[in-house]
Length: 216
Image 1 (cartoon, rainbow, N blue to C red):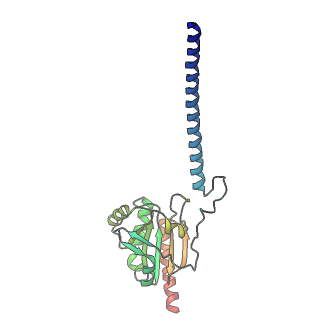
Image 2: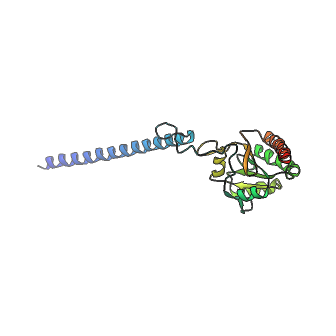
Image 3: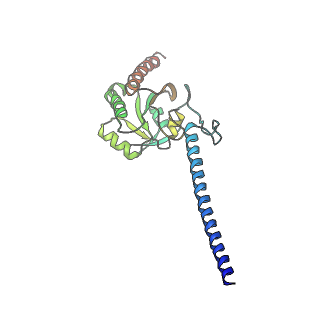
């Protein structure tokens, strides 16, 4: 009788061990599966795809085209001051807005300094604004270090950057670009451009626009 009880007890312990091992294996497999799902979802989001590998309609926001009005948006500048694009457009006939990927990086430094060095010529005809997804604090450091005479706008949610069509992917990144607005409407845009060309081309367009405005 005692031997039979001992056998049953051993069997119960063995069954519990097996059940415990099964639970651990199931939990581990579930964690791996969830990790793969998250990884796949992240890759799809970066490609602008939905969970089934199809192009996601949600990730295709409106992008401004030539002739569209400047967005009615307000962003913070390097001094944490609200800057209204509509207000800027009402006070300035022409606006040059340029985007850079990241503050204080080599290419972006060349770009903002290019606009700085040409600012005396540009300010005669247009308002100059730089924009990136950097924080206000990062913009302030960049602005002060390079002694910039114009505002840098902080767009961490890439709201304006998205409307301008300069998102590198739906979830991150910025394409170096520039846009020129005249009378509150988009006249020129260049998506993906080198730091130096963004300055020289923008300056040429502004000079041409100035001539056109004078002739009207």
